[in-house]
Length: 106
Image (tube, rainbow, N blue to C red; front, side, top):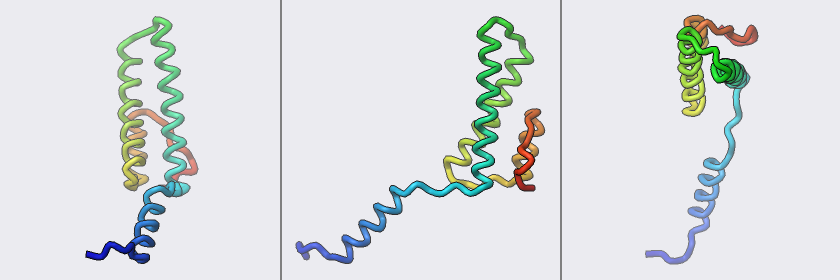
């Protein structure tokens, strides 16, 4: 067994380490998806504050649940670096009663 470090192996290790530690670049589409997710979270916060102030009704709870499901879908997909098809996202937003950014493709 060779106990002397191999320069080629060290270089491969450094390349692997660099690949693992670099932050991936977001595409313009992913940035729009992230921004729409942020808008959903702001709206969820607004609804939660209304509920905290005492005006809790079933409709508000169901709206908050719909928003949470959409937010979970978008963030989970982005975190796993999978692509969201624009038509799929538009349908999900429409079902939840959310507005899709006009700049979003599709």
